[in-house]
Image (spheres, rainbow, N blue to C red):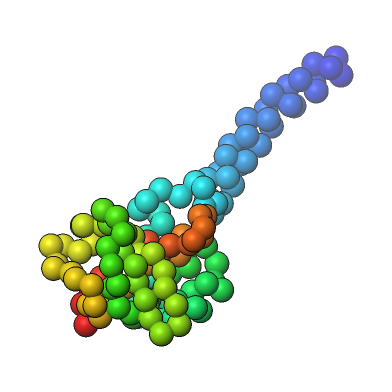
Length: 133
């Protein structure tokens, strides 16, 4: 009889514990390898992102939203540009959708908002907002 009560008790509470564990897991923040492209874009408006130099960006955590002002030096790939300021340089991934048909050329002064992607070396800036200055 004791075993029967134990079985009933476990079968009643086990599903509740599983649901609670599932809810806890779904509300936990995603780790960088779980992020999709849309999740990696900064959620902060430009005025709330960290305004930093490229050198300062190197000391920030992966996924941090930053705003950097600099100069486009050259195009290095389909959507990868070398961005430079007085403190250093960084590869900036600027998708065509973000450029919105803006004509860009080496030497253009720009302001970009994006998320740091430090899962690779050298790290990159994944740009979500772009503005020529």
